[in-house]
Image (tube, rainbow, N blue to C red):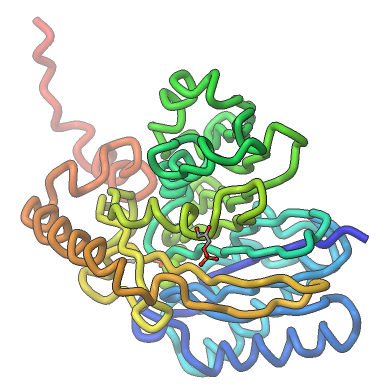
Length: 366
Ligand code: 13P
Ligand code: 13P
Ligand code: MG
Ligand code: MG
Ligand code: MG
């Protein structure tokens, strides 16, 4: 009896603007998950939010990509959208890009990170949830957790990790994936994952036995919709300890407020600020991008938690660094590299401007 850990999330309306989820939406979602637990579909569920994104953290025994679990998540988001509409919340139903559910929620707008595993004698799991950024934001921390011995001394000290980890990387433009083994292919892999807009880490496996260690959401809303419809606001599930990176090794990369795309109108670069659940309310220039970490001990599928892992003064300096970098980048106003490059603006303003000025260009090739 393998356990499935599913995190499915969507922005179905912001309170106020894009800064938070209204308590009534959380209440609606909690009622629905309570029913799904009673009916036996789910073993347990934890409902929360990061910024304006509603998060359904669920355990069950139906495997990944299960149509009933996905249908349940979709129906919950639809019900919450109704609540959002009644309160005229901002962007009600924003991430529901389709009118009808067709068996699998992947590709319909909501973000999905799932994994199936045999529950260990002790099973600490951390769910990372971000707002105002894209799934590529996980590349740098995932590399540090599973491939950098200066971050994770477990790679040096724990013999179960000496063979390293295998990374599954998605090419979200060409819709294909590749697996790299680390440490051998670390340098080549970095060439790809260092370009996090296109190449995104989807899964990480321990090489010793193929055990799944991490699973991330990698949907890109603009590629699904063909236009800007809000940021992806990704999630990441990681298992910890006993031959995997420890809880503290898994959190450690977030002491660096690294630069990620997102922030205002999804069109800027900004620092990823680790924060407590309470502070996951991006307001300044709709940001800066936030990440929260919910820690659970899983017991027979029950979610013991959540512990608010970034509610620790040891992350204060990362938060201060994020504010400093935010000030620095903001001074660039509409200039790159604060504003995203032209390839990304193709989903927003550029096509209209190119059309508007198409007859005004003077040929200077002579
Ligand atoms: P404790 O002695 O507090 O259990 O710590 C053990 C450990 O390995 C921390 O990384
Ligand atoms: P969200 O994806 O969090 O809704 O952000 C959209 C946006 O444009 C913020 O300025
Ligand atoms: Mg929003
Ligand atoms: Mg959001
Ligand atoms: Mg969004």
